[in-house]
Length: 203
Picture: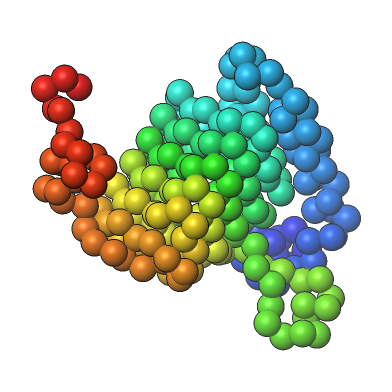
C-alpha cells in the first residue's frame, strides 16, 4: 500500500512522501495566486473555488488571506458560505461544510493529527480524520476545531472555543474544551443582543 493510499484510508502515513508532495504542491501554488487577488476580482475567486475545492456550491465568499494545506482541495462547501479573513484549514483529510455556514476571522479547522507515541511522531507520521460542520452554523472568531469533530446544524460556536468533541444541533457552545452552554430558543427570537429586541416588523 502506498503512502497516498494510507493517507486516503485515514491510516498513519508519511506526509512528506514524494508522491503526496508532488500532488500537494500544485494546489499550494494555486493558493499562492488566489491570495493575491484583489477584493473586486469576484469571478477569479469563484473560479478558484469551483476548480480547486472538492465541492463548492453557489454564492460562497472567502475574505483573503485563506490558508489550507491542500489549497482547499479536500474541502466540500455547500452554498451561501461566508468565511472571514485568515480561515486556516488543515485539509489533509476532508472537511464538509453545510449551506449558509459563517466563519469568523482566524478560525482553524484541522483534520491532521500526529501519534502520541514519540518514536512514531519523530518519524514525522500523521493521520487524518474528517470534520463535519452542519448547515446554518456560525463558527466564532478564533475558534479551533480538531480532527474528527462533528458540529451540528443551526449551532453557534463561541469565539475562541476549542472544539474537541461533537456538538449537537441548535445550541450555543463555548469554551476550552467547547461545551454546550444552552439551546437556541425563544429568547433568541426576541433579543439579538443582551436586552436589545429584534424589530421583526422592519426586517
